[in-house]
Each structure stands twice: as C-alpha cells, then as structure tokens.
Amino acid sequence: MTNLNVKQYNGIPLNPAPPNLPVAPTEYNAEHDNQVLSQLRLYFNQLNNFSYAISTPNYGSTPQRPTKNLLTGQVFFDTTLGYPIWWDGSKWVNSSGTAV
Image (cartoon, rainbow, N blue to C red; front, top):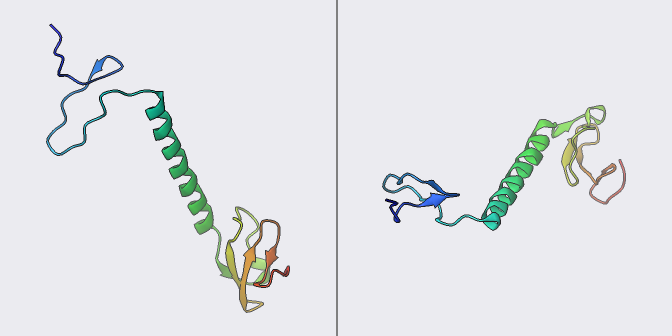
C-alpha cells in the first residue's frame, strides 16, 4: 500500500527532514530546475570575476601594470605616475579618459 503523505521527486520517495530543516518542494518541474541553474550560473560567474579581480595586482609601477584577466572599470594605482588609472576595456586611462 502506498503512503500518500510521502513527498516524492520523480517518483522517488523523499525521507522526512529533521525538524527545523527546509523540505524540498513537492512538485518539481523544468521551470524550477532552470531557476536553480540560472542562479548557480550567476553565482559562479560572479565568483569567477571576483577571483580574476583579486588575482591581479592593484598597484605598482607602469611596467607592472596587469595585462591579463582585466575587467572593464578595474582600477590600478600606478606608482610611476602617482595616481590611479582605469582599464576601459582596451587601454589604461586616467580620470579624464586620456590613455596613459
């Protein structure tokens, strides 16, 4: 005899959760899966961008400027020039937008 109170996912019974733990929704569908996958992709893309940003130095002399894994808007304090510069996506610029 089948117990109708047991929650199932794709026909597989889910064990009851211990008290105070979230219980999975009773009816999964492709929309739920797509929402979860979209959130995971967003999370890991942000994590990837963050790891690129922290793996490049944020100050140094002109020859020490980063050349890889640059993000548009990334700042670098050029100690040779004595002021911050920004990566505009193709070149390093100062605060007025002039290439440096």
